[in-house]
Length: 245
Image (tube, rainbow, N blue to C red; front, side, top):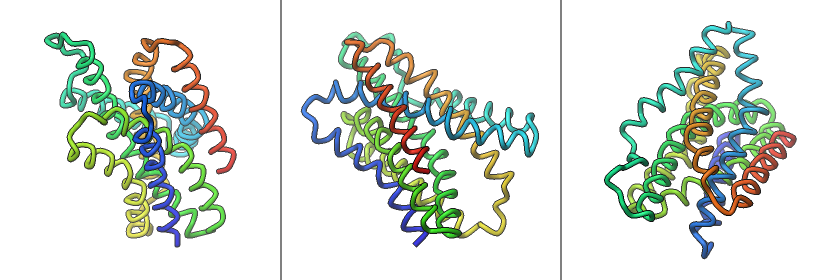
């Protein structure tokens, strides 16, 4: 049952993808989903990952925690070289340039989400195994903030080949239940310190995505009400999820 709860929390990203797929204004939804993700990730840092990283620093030392956060950001910075460049000087068509930006943001977000979702999946499974009701409430919170993430990943990759979308979205979608499986198998040897350091790595990756990718894109979107309203809704969703959790 604990693994089922973990699985349901992860597949909630599919609801976000469904919203984008059914909408008739893909550009508007794409920009809105980036803003939703920016608000969600910002609130996630402030209300969830940030406090957990502080707890890890207090328990296991500030230096390891800071290094883990830096490692998460550095990992995405290094992988940035292998992701399609969104500043292609040889691209002259505005539409193509916009597509490049979207693909870049989508793939970078998937990389960050996989690590983050694995940690969340491990947490959901552990909570559900100990207390099913508490685990289900936490999973509901996770599911709520997974919806805008599903919108972001699907909308930014909508012009890619089906195989690319399947691998990228499937990886982000299933990484939560993968975390549950890891916790189920390795629970005797997974220490609090390992979980704390993984949380710090995820924090670094989320910070990199929000500051280096989502924020610059949102600042360029016009009309301004689209990124502003999307960011506010993203913050509200994660705040509600945190209250439920």
